[in-house]
Image (cartoon, rainbow, N blue to C red; front, side, top):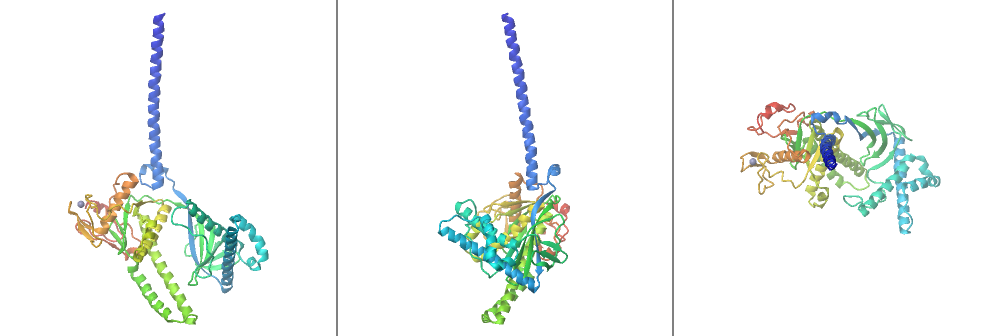
Length: 487
Ligand SMILES: [Zn+2]
């Protein structure tokens, strides 16, 4: 009896033990499989987030994504349409200023702040009182109220700390000077024209068509100080993610050359480009003439428009150049690593010349940022305090200090001769890869510059370092020849 009891106990114990082992194994199996699946998922998530080019996971990545894209067209309104556009600007400004005054009054009298719905409801009775509001596009007026509500929202969020970044000022009264604009809906793109509510057909140059599957959300009609009219159509588009190139690039931002890639390609500062310098010389001349004219004279007004036109021409020429650079970088790489420019730091800097350079850098990096997002290209920002200039990209030796004027230096540890900016770009590439993938990827700075668009061919220069990198034919990269040279 006792024996059988002991037996039973032993059996029970054994069974429990067996279950335990099974359970443990199961648990072990379960944990492993979860971790395995988790890892798989993690990589897939990483892949879709970074556009990382591991071929195994390519099938899991979305092939397209939705993006807001603006199409800006120059429009040529007739004189009648110009008058109506002018009236719409005026009415929009009037509505905006009317509600701003109302809000300020309410604040003084401790009354409830109006939301955009409240303002919108007040618009209809207001139109009965004020005749001229009936003439213009009603959506433009509604949007004026929405914009005012948004401006207040940003201001309140900034005070309460909900909104990060520099402090936002309360909305101001709108002035009739400077750039004027209004926003509307239901704009249609026709052949060489736009259909705009109230204005009907307005002549336009459709230099790039809006894709057929794009959904138009809103349109902004604007007039620049130089008298040109534009329509900017905001659309939602499915954008295909680009093919993997198996190339990555690190970029250093500079002053003499605005951008230097880890492949040794240098892009000149836009101010040093011949065609921009020419416009600048002309601007200087016109400014001198303008200063000599009398205020109120015909010549004064004529020159004012000419000066404004030249200003906007320079901006357009610069932006065209930045668009070309960012397009080149995004089209040729799977990942772009760039120095991070601290925005708040930018504001603290008191030197004007420096501020101008930083404005240029942030315009350019902004373009790289959004183009990369559209194409599903990884874009990383490297900490500004990362010592990219004074670290040797070959052996990792770090110099104590490096003078700003030193353009070329020799590594005391490995003897490599470095071009200052190129070396910094290579270091940024390596640091970016460490940040993204934890390790340096196999794609080193090969010196293969990829395909440079024609517009940039004359504006970019390749750093030549005969001993290390053989001479390149621009636009025709030969990665296989270069890899053997061991850069
Ligand atoms: Zn070295």
